[in-house]
Image 1 (cartoon, helix red, strand yellow):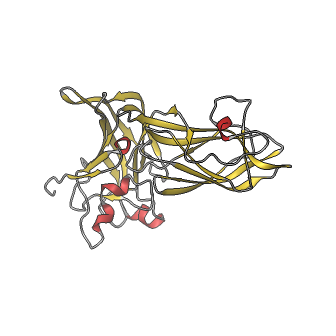
Image 2 (cartoon, helix red, strand yellow; image 1 turned 90 degrees about the horizontal axis):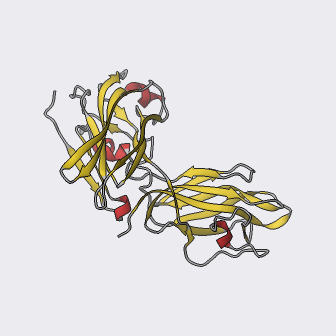
Image 3 (cartoon, one colour; image 1 turned 30 degrees about the vertical axis):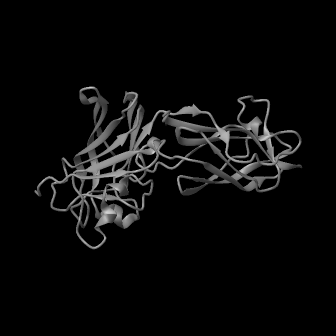
Length: 307
């Protein structure tokens, strides 16, 4: 077995998204070895993967990320490399792992959660419930670590490859407000009616493809909850949402119920997105009156930077 190797990286972002991440081993062979480092397991992209060095025994290797002051709901894992069927089968997949949560206290790190988890040999996210364990204090956070204790061997290569490791923090409602000029509205239904918490009011945006931006100042945002407005106005069907320099497209049901969509997790935990959330209506469900109706718009968050 090779000598232990700890690789560390810090991402310099606004404080709400500040995070470091470490792994015990990386497959550093070849000209594109950087593709297999820890960042590839926390980039919200199943096409990339953290890969362990082939000379390692694989068992005992770990990945660890920093998390802000928060409560940990669960951790999620894509146990293999989900780029395609070939990468999935050719490389090893995690079969079992020890999940640990640490809080940064006055006397250093203190472990507040530990569980041995087993995983099925299948693609997609698999979850380990943590149960809202609190980490951090006013000026500190904590860490989440996953240590491999067993693996499914790959057909062609000895290395275990992991597409995603993500910590799901407990969500809260965040104060949601417009950024910049308020979008044009019709029939006396301004934007403020989408964020006033009153189920009887609603916002009707002018035009077929309105666009605007919202924020939750000081919060690390994790999801966007959209409640379409009433008929006879058109309802949003397809939204293009830009957040943390990533763009995603969400499709809503033709319904007046609240619908939630996850925002990017850019450094391994939910709520690590920052800044404005830009929303563009790309398609609508037809209405008989002009304008696109929103009953409510709500950002959810997992952590707060009040400094």
